[in-house]
Length: 288
Length: 279
Image 1 (tube, rainbow over the protein chains, first blue to last red):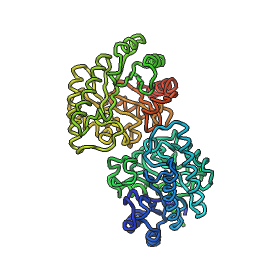
Image 2 (image 1 turned 120 degrees about the horizontal axis):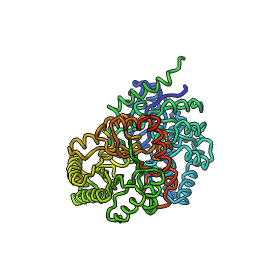
Image 3 (image 1 turned 180 degrees about the vertical axis):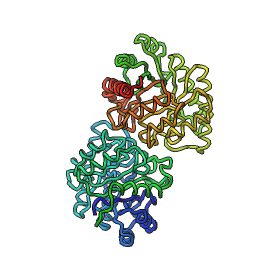
Image 4 (image 1 turned 60 degrees about the vertical axis):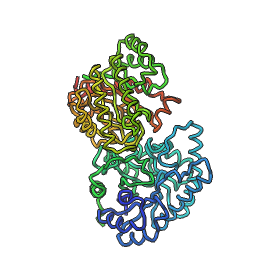
């Protein structure tokens, strides 16, 4: 299947758990998505068995995305803390391998919401620590056929990797071809000078795509330059997943970081429905 | 048509006379100043403005945890009101037209008290400040900030409700295109929603750099500003790409925001004004 269209569980249930899976998969399939992106806020609540049985039942593919709060810090000065973060990413990779997700996605280089002002040497140090830990994660993933899709976040959510250019620099430091990028239109709207240019700069390093409107609302309802963005995905011949992401007001792991204080759509159901309708216009189901 | 000014906040620790000189040099009509009355030598600034044949346009209020209009602590709420009144005095002393107002500490992103109480405190404070400002011929501009900087008023429509409830003639809404680029589905439409209540404008591109350095299309935005009958100040609040803006400015600073962006910003808008045949 090319360009499967997906919905993030952040729109449906937070924290996601096995007990929420039946309803989440049913609703995602009923909305007309090809794929559900499962966000692993608490790994203890999610099993491969539950995801696989629901995937089989509904015909949905499964993607795996991480959530990186302060306890999952892959660039922390303390090696033990970094190792705990790495353990979490490896758990996500195991889950991804078990459910057939081509990647684990997320801003895995630092805790989301960390926005200090670093002097250049400190910043270099943190980037290199992130690269070292992620190199170990990438190696672990490569052995299991799972790529890392590393997500730049906007300036208010991280001080380390805000742009595609900075994410490519991090990938170079990681030095493993299985480490690539997740690009998200919400963050790109704030940080990239031209969205199309940023996509083309990322080129074949793009492993995953998330779409969200400039206000985190329904794709197509705001001022993100969608034609420019999708044309650029064509230019780089991107064939991977495109996932609609927003956040329930009840999201816990990264609630302060995403700062979503008001409803951005009439309801999360409306956002999911209108989101897939917008994407299908551009990416119709293949005739076969 | 419009008068142009630039927020000197981004000039950092540079002596203010250098900023005033730069703005005069690049054809600005006014100078936007940060409101720190206790730290400012008002007569020196007035002399400097006079020497360059320019004037103060507007005073930007800085809201901190110690100056929070909706703090759960009544003493802090009082201190915040007194602070803005001080900015009104400063505006009057320097001949500035506008003092900005946002009813939460900057970067405070969750309420401390019941939201309806906070709203009521904010309305009462704004009314008191607006009445005081009216005696000095100063207008209060309510500024929505993006979700990462506040939670109470993030959109134009909410700001319009706010000033309607305050109900004073000299309080209106300001538009800042950086915040709007995050919060509004259609920036030009949001400006039309503000309509005749538009009293101040901050232009910045999608990445908070000078217009033209990001991906916003400023033509419909400038057209909307003209269509609502606005003939006041066009200012530029351009800030470094960081969550900790203060840290950047008090540290190494941001050299591109000096001559380069100062010249680029006014040049960009004036070209659009000419193209749209607004003048």
